[in-house]
Image (cartoon, rainbow, N blue to C red; front, side, top):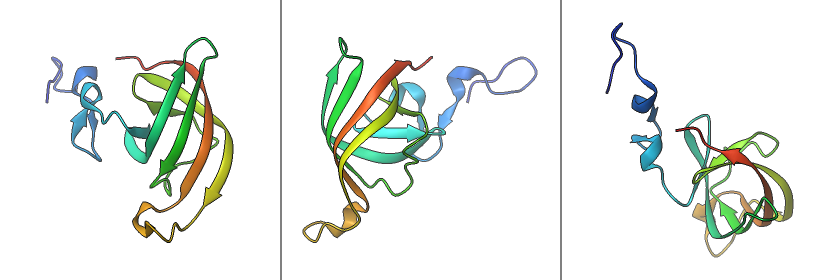
Length: 112
């Protein structure tokens, strides 16, 4: 890991410890909070004019704190609306908490 002159870690050396990836190597379908994967998404639609991301399904979201700011791809986002929430999908119980028809505001870009 890159270090500065005092032996501390440099910003480009920050790790996503949950997946062992640097910020630049993050998973494209993951939502992050506190540099950890807290959910995965299916069917995201990014609308830059409306500054909004609409997501068909968010799954494995047990660790996701909905009122808190998140990071998705290169965006800082905050979830505003959830159309439907379910704890168990009988067809796919491994997905954990599932949120459908999710809308999130784009707050800005992640600083690299």
